[in-house]
Length: 336
Image (tube, rainbow, N blue to C red; front, top):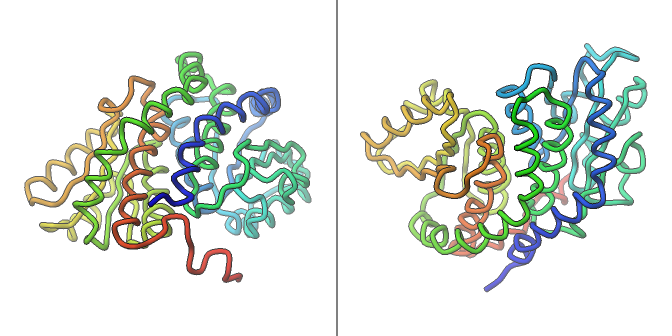
């Protein structure tokens, strides 16, 4: 049986192509603005904040000229340190463009006379209309709750904007690989389905997953736990930085407990490997995704690569448990 999520996964490459074609000029304008500010605020919720985490950590690992802070919508809204007319820029991310938390923070930033940018998939949404600079991801409507094509395009916009403004010494090569990402994704959608369907069959009875990554992979580990496993597959899940394994999770690391590791051979993945070794000695059910098995790209682009096999894993995990991976029980129905 095919769910709506299947079609939306397969639409990711074309959505990315269309977004690059349509929005590149605007993204370049934002990159120029960033070169002249003291700080960049990135604001989002759910899958959207996961893209903010990934690009923040990718920039921090590679560039020295951009200061980034990430907030959820209401954390930004209630931040007492915001100053009117300070030399900053605020970038807001939301698939729908109507996320109440993020919209409230956009309106506050506008009141403080900040340059504001919204990245959203809905051209007629409040966030697109109210931001000083709107960027529209060209995905058409997305219905699956965990976000596939809107995630990949939103992440790509953030990477394009921030790396173009950065002093990362290999940014030209990274941005070239980013422009080639639609073709890379097409290959991964074909090559990673079978293995992850089998993996989902093996783990269908497990009810809790820990998700670990270092650097920009933490943002994807956050998305994997918070929106993919909990919302899509209806499984308990918890994300952590790999380096935090030995603080807390190490006491729950027991035989038969599944832990997903995202490993790209960053310097900090020395700690990821130590956690993997510890788990294997205790015979945990380690699920290890290594960048070298999927693509030869700049390591900082890891989230773009890993998300495809992870989507297949979650898609079939939901299916084998009788769940539609795109459906919701409460999200969008309960407001507070």
